[in-house]
Image 1 (cartoon, helix red, strand yellow):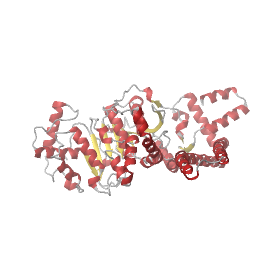
Image 2 (tube, rainbow, N blue to C red):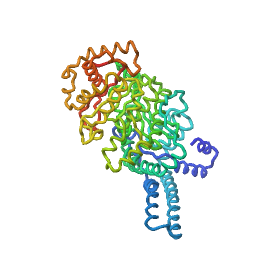
Image 3 (cartoon, one colour):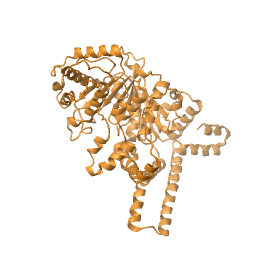
Image 4 (cartoon, helix red, strand yellow):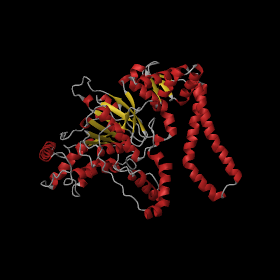
Length: 543
């Protein structure tokens, strides 16, 4: 855009008209005009017939290409086994089809550019975009903040290398030898195909092109509402792998709140089909906190695909942005995750152990036990290998390396995290147990585990209350605070070596109540803001 603006000053009217057309061809998709229309939703951008027709063609080509990319290898294998090698005429016919697709794609882009050129609203937006890029001024001053558009049109706000913050990388992977690679190639190839063709679509359906296209209008409306209600700031972050991450920040620092909640930043990690525009950000905002939402790679306007390595890089640049650009200290950052977003949060908590707190809602300990309950037993051998190699989302293992305050929210009627809706099979139970085992190994033993399972299986809140279980919360809290005062907060704690079995059971039930809250709802029900709380180190509740 900067080069085109320089050309404008040196070009005649015809040359400038051609340059303007190029800008329209290459420019970002405009979705809404924020400051127009009635109410808080703004006004949707109305493309003319040329632009609308071309957009439909571009979308159709992208969908066909996406399907062909993954189905062609399978189709070729089937064709060769069924009919043998194709004839020369068949190859030429296929080649003509292949050549026709990029030509159609290119023509659609040109037609769309012509449609935009003839649309005064888009030309006005393009002028504002060029002015913002040239002057590097505040988006509110130039008027660019009055538009909602494709993220590719926004300059990169923050790059991962703009931060001197160093993450603590504790993950390690064993490298295969040459012979092992050769012998495992057939099975590894099958796992790769299953991960890319089926696995990613089932595990992260929000990354599907058709899904994104279906919700694009709702996402645009959501961003517009956040701008008009909360004066939010949208940014484009560049991760170390080259992906650009779409995020939105609402600053509540300096708000007239006696609790100063706005000085804490809640980073929201969404589920596998959720977006920050329609997701969890409203919960911490309603509670008075500052909030930062972001979309997984491949979701909305974030680029890439939601594989574990890209997820780790995405949340890494989000945390770096929060600390370096937004100016929040690690101890003032809270990671709030829902469902599969627990993996992203666990990556950040493991990499930056000084983060203030972690809240995990409706999540799991590891992925395969959930996958195994939803597929035929005969497919476990391929699904297990695929998950281990490509989607090893071991949330419990990564959270065990974090030593800060943590809260697990379990949904009583969670149909996604349990088998047939049974509370005893909820994977949040296993997440809690693994965390407690890591932090309090002398309290969580084979002798005390049965009473914890009895507590986890109780569906009524009255049956889980400490009063009903005859637990002395004041005594347990005092013992834990004395231990932390003498030994510090770093885990594992050796408390329990001087306690009797009954005292250990009492302490275990108390700890379980501190680390887990129960919400009587199904998986997709929004969490009420008054149910959201940020845990703090050493502050043990007596309820």
